Amino acid sequence: DGLRHHVRRKPNPNKRLDKNIEEIVLKFSSDNPKYGNSRISKELKIQGIKVSTGSVHSILKKHNLNTSKKRIKKFNHE
Image (cartoon, rainbow, N blue to C red):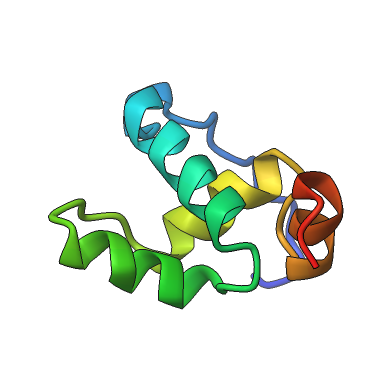
């Protein structure tokens, strides 16, 4: 059973995050490039924006900003 070929399901575009939330996560990560996924998620939750740690990771990875080094380099923070 484990070795049989399994067909992957097509991604469901309805599960995508709102573009507005994506922009908020990117803005927050540019202002705080040393924050990790969990910290970004928690800080946004304090502001009333619910976004999971996994969603933050997916957004940052989609924009090739999934490590603090990449964020610092892109946003020119020291």
